Length: 156
Image (cartoon, rainbow, N blue to C red; front, side):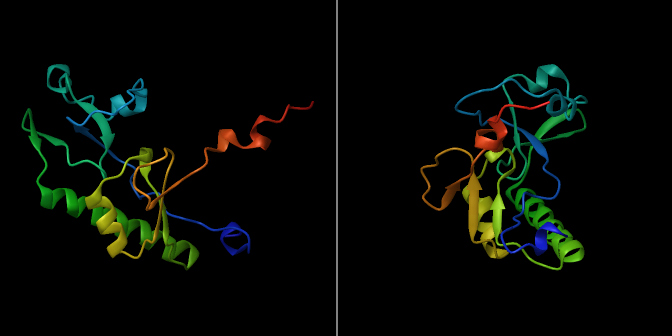
């Protein structure tokens, strides 16, 4: 609340659940999967996970694990997930800060046209991701580790 009231601070949204999905869409530059991400799918047998990536549930349609099988999420279920997550996120801002953000930084820096479309319909006007995107509507965000103060030598 204190930060939200400062004149030089602007708060944006970053989703409500920050959840994951298994998908057959692979990242361009694969990275090792974080243990917490793998743990999210511990109930999915390894043979079913083989050949799939763990990505943003908001940005990718992906698969649901039901009755021992991976089933593609319907377009409707995917869009409903985006809307629900966004409504809960905006509700949190309103309840706790009394304001509505218009800037959004994508979870895991992953986005898709359907996600952006839903976010725009909810009032978001600025979108941030870490990479230099081909989409001119996405603003490159600065990683906190690249800030000069983050690299300043520590004093005792």
